[in-house]
Amino acid sequence: MLYKILISKYLRRMQTKILITIFLIGFIGVLNAQENVDKNEMVGFACSFSGQPSKTVKKYTQKLNRKNYKWISKRLESKNNAERYMSVIILEKLNDIGKYKLNAIELNLISEIKKSDELVSVCSGCTYFDKVSLKELLTDDKILFAKNWLDYTIKMK
Image (cartoon, rainbow, N blue to C red; front, side):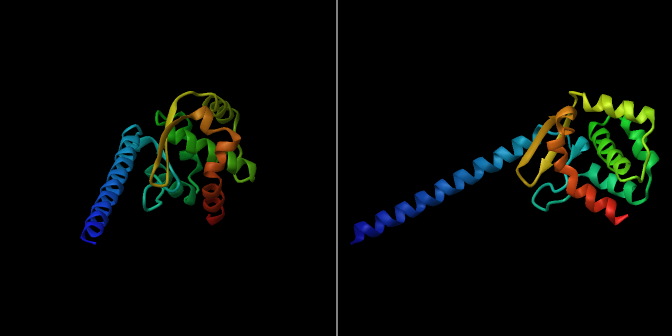
């Protein structure tokens, strides 16, 4: 009987150690993924444990709410790839719904950005952090990444 109790306690300790080890490996993996991204050039609509938007998304939300479309348009030429991405998706959406008319220069810049292999840091939730090319991030299936935010933010104005 004592033998069974001792084995049971031993097995519970081993289970606890295994669970802690798995948790720590996962935690270290998340930290390593975060090291590869640039938080100043990050696009994310629900990042980290709190599900908060990235700094770039917050900044663009404010500009959109103030209808500062000229500021957004000027960022098509930014050195910051997250800003270029946000400017493209917003201006195209505004153009599609008739709230903004893209000019020839903007259309040309957007076309160049959509072909760009430059990288943008992206996040989603607490574990997904990556770098993705502008070209890939601006494909139709990846735009869904921003669709809910765009629809909600533009309707709120």
